[in-house]
Structures are given as structure tokens and as C-alpha cells.
Length: 349
Image 1 (cartoon, rainbow, N blue to C red):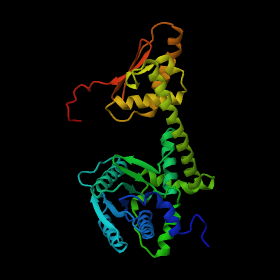
Image 2: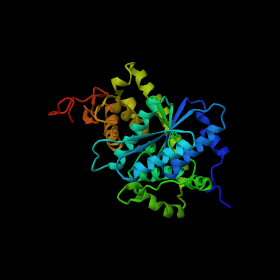
Image 3: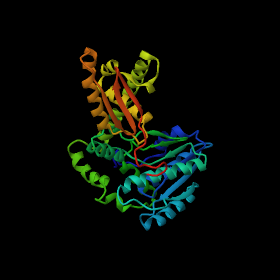
Image 4: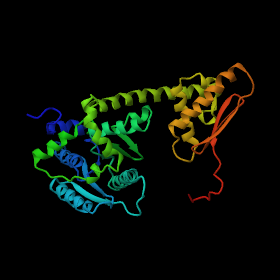
């Protein structure tokens, strides 16, 4: 008899997993042809049958043009979608592919095409089939890169993508349950060889998961850790909102005017880092600021703060980070857009 961790997902389970979207006008299902996404389409179709008037379901397969098998896999998804009375579209990633950072670029292209498809069919949500196993791997990947609390919170259940919401209904569902669901239904699925290619980071980390599970760090525990860190991250964001309002109230000029140094330095370190990150990303024009660099900036400001409070001499700081200039003068932290780099012509990299 299968355990709870390996039992097929029932219709009742599907009703619970998808219940939040029954009022949606249309939903895009991201279906690559692998077991997780095929199970997403199969279960979404069964869920819709339980509704008197369910949302329009549109399965979208993104062909990245990286494997010759991808076109056949897209056709297989199309045939299954037709059998399930689900519309299907294939979106192709065209143009040159980068020689480095291919997984990241492919992921960005995938989401860009999914959002385009969602907007074209009036969908309010895009559903992906990320599982509990994917969440655990994301935690390990971000831990290895030295991510902070926000990064270790891993994937959120829902994420705004402009006018469309990206949703992940299977974040608490083990992959084994989805495979068992398809096996019980007699539905075939594809196996992408890049999921086992050791040239890429995620497959290498995936190979470590059994050893980590043997030490107690299994997918369920790592996913629980991500949920707890997401809860902590949300609380810290609320505290940062309050700190931002408090600093703005001291001079009435709002966060774009910068911060009073002494009041800023009195805040907890994590809140200072988050305030700096927000302000820099708000006015900078070179992408999100790196956490490590913002932490170093916070430490530099922290060294100046106590001296400024005691009135011992003149203390200044000026630094450019992520397209913003951060400076300290006359007891205030100023954060303004940096001028364009020399030699860079508008519209050109």
C-alpha cells in the first residue's frame, strides 16, 4: 500500500489544490511534457469537471529550441490536451541562445512567453507544476549561493507578474505523488535529459538530495524551512515599512529624500539593509543591488553613525552601487540616481 508521500493525488485533493482559482476567467497551465506538468494538466482537467462553470484552461508548452525532441514532446502535450478538452499552444523561444547562463536565460524566456500567452487569452493566472522537491532544491541552491532570508524563502505560492499572477499549487506535494497519479491513470510523460545533466547546477544538487535526506534534511523538511523563512521575511518587510514611515516622518520629505543618519543607525541591522536595498533599487538604473554589497554599505554607514551622534569630526561617505549614488553629508544619507557611465551611448549596452 502506497504511503502518503507516494499515493496518487485524488479528485478531492485536486479540488483543494485548485480551489483558489475557480472564479478565474481563464488559466494558463505551463506544460512541458514532463511528469509534474502533465499531472498538472490532468488534475486541472479533472478539477474543472467538478465545477458547474469552471475557468477556461489553456495549456502552453514552451519549445526553447535546445533539443530536437522538444517539438515531438509539444505535439504529445497537444494530443493529450485535446483528449482532456483543454486548449493548447506551443510558444517558441527564437533567436540566438547565450553560451553561458543558459538555464537562467531559458527560464526567463519561458516566463516571458507564458505571460505573453496569458495576456493574449485573457488569463488571470499562470499555473506551474513546481513540487515540494523543486522547493527543497531551490533552498539548497540559494543556500550554496549565500542568499539572505528573502532568497532562502525560495518560491512563493503566488507571485505577481504584471497583470498576471504566477501560481504554484503543488509546492507542498511530493513529486512521487504526481508520478503515481500518472501511472495510475496510464498516462505517458517525457523525461528531459537536461534534468540529469551534471553540467548544470540544479541536477548536481538534485543528486545530493538522497544523502541530505539520510541526514534528516529531506524535501519535506527543507520545504518547511522555506515556508518558515517566508513567514519571517513577510514580518521583516512589515517592520521595514514601519521604519520607512518613521524615518520619513522625522523630516516630512519621504523616502526619496534619504534618511537621517543617527535615526537610521539606531535601527536593527536587517532593517537598515532592507531600507538601503529598497532605496537603491528605487532610484538605481543598473538592476537589483547585490545583497553582499548592500550589507557592506550598511556596515560602513554603521561605523559613521555613532561618531556622527557624538559630534566627533566631519564624517562623509560617497559610493556608487547598482546605478545609484549613496552619500553622507550634514547628518543625512542621500541616495540619488548615478549619472550615466562615460562612453555609454543611450540605447546601446
